Picture 1 (tube, rainbow, N blue to C red):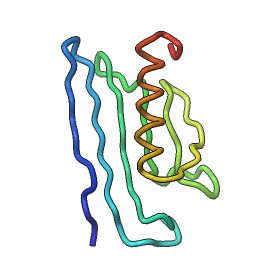
Picture 2: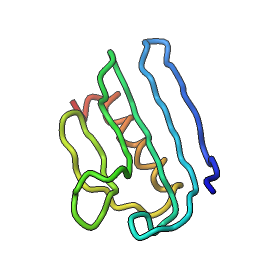
Picture 3: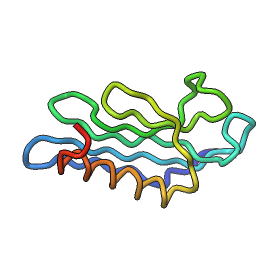
Picture 4: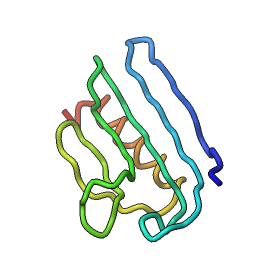
Length: 99
């Protein structure tokens, strides 16, 4: 049985969209932490930053993040660190560090 831990959508004045979804789920071999998540930052209908742990054949870890068109592995610690890392990447986009 899953439990919704976070479900939030925010639309900024400029139209940027931030959506965060985190669920606690039963632990499995594919998901030993028992957490499923999808966090995304969208501008002009394009994903600029995305974090999720959907299976994508990335090796031993399903945890990854999307930075524009790139996909890189993500070192998942816990849901608190996840939201902090996501917020930091969103801020980097806003400041032009990630373009």
